[in-house]
Image (cartoon, rainbow, N blue to C red):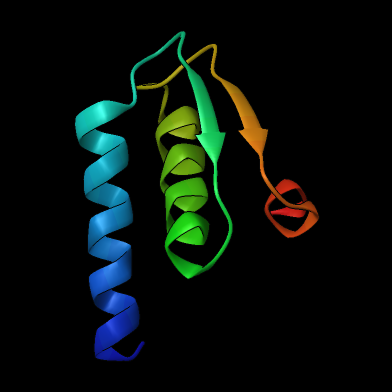
Length: 65
């Protein structure tokens, strides 16, 4: 992963870990940083630390992820 993508991953993961809580409604943007946000939300939901999210994607690409 290149340095720019590493930074985007760090920002996306930080945003999820800091601001997203179970039961929230979350708007998901588009692009590489949003990709990492979706990735982290998925990880946290699989481990059980996030539950009952309503996620709304802004693009078809984000929805497919």
